[in-house]
Structure formats: structure tokens, C-alpha cells
Length: 277
Length: 327
Image (cartoon, rainbow over all chains, first blue to last red; front, side, top):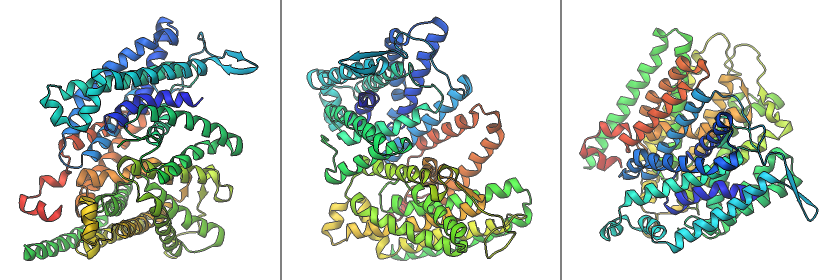
């Protein structure tokens, strides 16, 4: 089920990994997406699977707006650029959590019935819960799409080029802000997709993002910054390691395995598995 | 230039002494327990942030895992006290030494990492510590440790009726951290650290022992933070993994320094003096609603300050002549 972590991480891989901008509000993006999916279900009875594109579209706009209103200015900082990014996005995360508490109350919510929820499918005698399976498939598709997008389209190349050298990119007529705003939108949309699917089988509450965010950072860093494939591989490894640790250690310690593997990998390869920066 | 520098350092020391004196006298006028509480926390975070600043500000190794040392300090002290009856004063020292040793042990593999990889590694190691303590039955696991109340005594550093001793200890800790920073700023180590921060390759080629500089900074920083953790444990008299090792402590240590001015002598103090009362007041005013208004206010402030003043609040005061010497 590591592909689910992969799904959360893929959006982050684009923002954090490819554009080299720290986003500490990633978990909160996920939270917003889950709430959106929940409300679409509660008020309009749209199944999360159907509303997923809507949620993704909404998050795309949200991500682009966040970039244009906040992150753009954070990146302009001449001193301590890294810290400014960390604390700007972290402040944003706190505000989003506060807003969610204010408007949605801290109650736990869940989507009681949906097309996928609670069903299992059996493949060759192995029972798999459907929502997770769909999540895994969407995750693979999202990674493949992103990989092609980054490596095969002009726009994808523009994103990488802009990170490498914003000055040179401006000379050949690429608008850095447009490229990055689009990148942020896309990253947020991918998280929106993840949130929509996860809303089916996870409780939804204002702090839900925090627990996934750290694992998403670890996943991206494990795979290595600057590599889409790395984040995908990282997601699978994280999922496998978690499953294995859950067998050996008490369930509350399952994250220890993930963290230890991260440390082990970067001690041996300080750039992550497939990292280029 | 040299004369300027010495003069500035002497002036800093005098200002610090005056501020400490003023702070020491405030309890004579401030009798309100809530306000005293806020003052204690402010001083504590100023001290913690100052210690964090040594590794992350001066030496440039951004750590978001200092909660580990904070928690280790708290746990070492309380475990020694509740299980073996060792007085908290010795526990404090022990906690500091344990933390410093662990910081150096971790430094071996960690300081090879750069940038995001290092920051994430520090977050991750603190998280591992948190989870381990969560599952460590002997250390109280998730239930934590309640410190037995045995009446007011300096010996056991425990006071029920008055907060004043805690106040003076927090003040002493803050002064100690400030003084250590002040002293190190002008030492061989201080210059090495700044060289390592600005350009490790160039520093190395000029004969700076980059690796050991980082180790030194980590050890000093961890020791002071652990002493802060011990103090906090005695102050709140109840600890559990979340309340002393949670990620929020790592951030609360970093924030004042970043807001005040990272890698500067006065930044952490200034940042804490503004941020902590603000945090406590918003929590006091809006926190009760349980609807997150305090979070909204707090988060907005962080965003605004970090966007408006990337060098920290201190940059408002510095004249161009001074910035060259400070940074």
C-alpha cells in the first residue's frame, strides 16, 4: 500500500523535489482536499470517486494562488531563503489548520458510504480493499503522467530549467512566475487527487495532514530530490518497510522503520536513491 | 575596525547586564501569576532559541530536531529522580551530558548531509526518539512521568506556592545561553562556525576543521537545550513524550531566532520577547473557544514577519556598518 504514500508524495515531489521550494503546508493541502471531497459528498451526494477531478481542479487553483500570493515573495528573500520558505509555508499550515478548526470544527468526520468504501476484491486468493487498490492505480497513473510531463513536454522542461537557472530562463522568454505557479497548481492538484481517494477510508479532521506530511517529505528525500522516479520508488519502499515493521514491531512503532531506512539510505547515499541535487 | 568590534562587544555585555538586572527586578512589580508564567516561558524560550542559534544560526546547520535534546534532558532528569532518587540538579547536568554525547554521536553520520537531506534527517531522528519513548514501558511510555510532589525545596528544585525560583532559574539559563554565545562569538570556534556556514569548502581549504566545528556547535547547543528541558520538566512537574519531545518544540526553539535574526547575538532574545508573550496571549484570549482563532492569528503573524523581514526583526535596528561585523 506504499503507493498511497507515493500518491501523496508525488505532488510534493513536484513542488519540493523538482522546484526545490520547501512546502511545509503539504499535509494541509491534503486536509483541505479531504474536506472538499467530504462536503461534496455530504451536500451534493457526489461520490468521492466522481468528485476527485473537481477536488483536483479546486486544489490546482488553490496551489497556484498560494504560490502567487505567498511563496513567490518568500522565494524573493535575499537572506536565509531556506528559513523564510520553511516558516512562511509553516505559518500558512497553521493558519489553514486554524481555519479548518474554525469552519469545520475539530470533529472527526468520515464518508459513511461510497462506491468503494469497505469493499474488497479478490485477486488470485488475495483480498485487497478496493479503495486502496484504486489509490494504487491512480498513483501509478499519476507518476507515469508526471514523468512524461516533466521529461517529454516543453513545459515540464521549463520547470526544471527554471529551478536550475531562473536568470537564463528569463533570457529565453520563459516567465518564471507562470511556470512555478503552474507547477504549484499541478502539485496541489495531485495532492487533491490523493485527498479525494483517501477521504473514502480515513477519518477527516483538521490535523489529519500532519501525520502524512512527514512521511511524504521522507519519501521524496529518500528517492532523492529532482527525480520523479525516485519519489515513486521511495513511496513503494516506504510502504513495504512499513508493512514489514508492522509485522516485527508493535504497530505504534511502524514509522520507526520508515525513518530508519531513510537515515540508512542517506548515510550511504547522501543524495537519496535517485537524486540529482 | 578592530577597536569598533571590541567596543561593540563591551557595549553588548553592558546592555545584557542591564537587561538581566531589569528582568531580575520585574517580579517585585509583577505579582500576577499568569503574567509571571508568561515571563518564565519567554525567558526559557529565549535561552533555548539562543542555544539552537549556536548550531543552526552561527554554524548554519539548520536543525528542526532539537526537541530530541529537550526531551532527553527532561527524561534523564526525571528518570534519575523518580527511579534512583538523584537530585534534579545532578539530573540536569547528566541530561546535558547525555544530550551532548548523543548529539556528537549523531553528528558523525549527520554532518555529511547537506541542505534538505540534513533538515529532514534531524526531524526524523527526533520523531524516532518520540516514538521510542512512547513505547518504552520503564520510562512511563505514553503515560509519561508525574514528578512526585515533596514540598518546596531548593534541593529538589520544586516549588508549589511560588513561581519565583523558576523565574530566576529561567533568567539564569537565558543569561547563560546568551553569555556562552557572546563568548563563543569572538572565539576561534565562533569564527570557524561562521566560515563553515558561509562556505564549507573554502573554510576547509584554509585549515578550518569543518567536521569538528560542527560537532562542537552541536554539543554545546544540545547541552544547553537539554538543561532547558530539565528545567521545563521541573516547572510543569509532569512529562510525557508528546509534551517534551513533540515537533512543536523544535519549531518553537527555531522561531524566535528566525524572527529576531538568525545567527545574531540578540536575535533569539528579541524574537522570544515578542513571540512568546504574543503566543501565550492569543492562546489565553482566543484559545478557549477551541475554534482555532489563536492558530489563525499566530500563523498569520509568522507568515507576515518572515516575509517582511527575512533577516529578522534585528535588521530594523542594525546600521550598515554593523551588519558587516555581525554577519
